[in-house]
Image 1: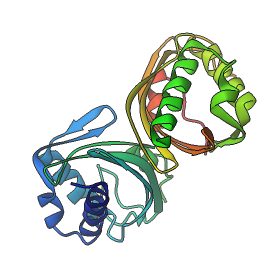
Image 2: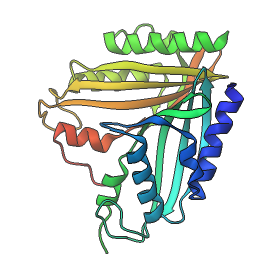
Image 3: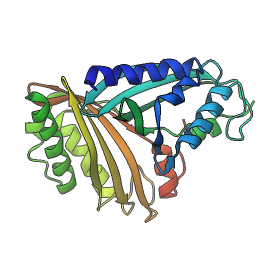
Length: 133
Length: 137
């Protein structure tokens, strides 16, 4: 796949994710791994996390910034803006608006997203640091 | 091709940081360079000073370069930042604990030198690993 196609694939994945379209998960390979700092998530674990996130942050919108693509990889930065309207990782909804910024890289294989490394401030701790009202 | 030169420059900068070799910084970092951290770091001299501060706190400070990709005037590099907290940092007493966290740097190049860079890191996880309190926000 070309660099242009790889970037389109990443953009499409975000569009599907924001629409809460299950077709997003069809873009991931069966042996997909998501590297979240000190944790590695399998496809099933990624599904659980993404479902939980989208359920807890019902109005989540992602704005993708610079994308850098070369070979089989696409790096990008993204800002998610959302409202904490549902329980997430044991934290009751706070109604707070969050801004989640991170940079990540996808490895693409056979036209699908095979591996992901993401780096940014830990969301769970961000929520924990928000004073309860 | 300039993307190859830019990647080579990022690799050289990574080596310089790991060795504490500050003399080559002006070859790699433009005078109008801005590193978008809080606070901002400016120019090769600012860059050098910020790393001298880091190495005072983490004498074995090391950045392992894991992935590097380049397109146009941008380079994205993924590193693992490692070190042992042995020296005072921002008035905090060292805990002797180790940090190992991923860091992403997006860098923009002009005329073969870095002019701008944006870091991404999980500083909250770093504070937790080091056993120091999270600063008030």
